[in-house]
Amino acid sequence: MIVFDLKCSKGHTFEDWFGSTQEYESMKEMGELECPQCGDSDVTKGLMAPAVAVSSPSDAPSCSADPGGTPGCGMGGCGGGMCGFE
Image 1 (tube, rainbow, N blue to C red):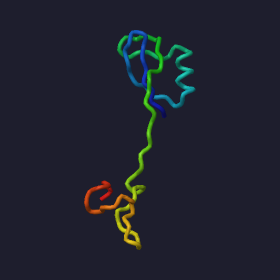
Image 2 (image 1 turned 30 degrees about the vertical axis):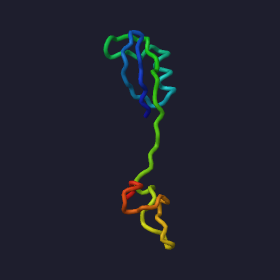
Image 3 (image 1 turned 60 degrees about the horizontal axis):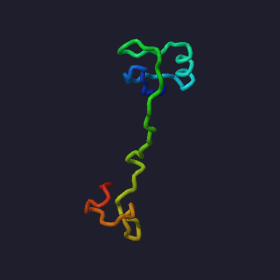
Image 4 (image 1 turned 135 degrees about the vertical axis):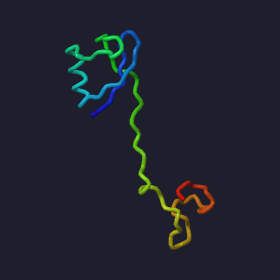
């Protein structure tokens, strides 16, 4: 599923979910998209921010020292709050 920010010709913005971009395009071509506020079927995709993946805590470097005594994150100062992985 994908969510699109949509906008009607009267300036109302709203979101709707689609199975794919092709589903959105097909529904738009057939006039099946409507603004929930005014019923306008002249609907276009609005500007969207890209989805950004974030690492999970398990992907974060460890603050434990390696055998040589160097902190795992490379920032130094483990225990001092410098890196935020504590």
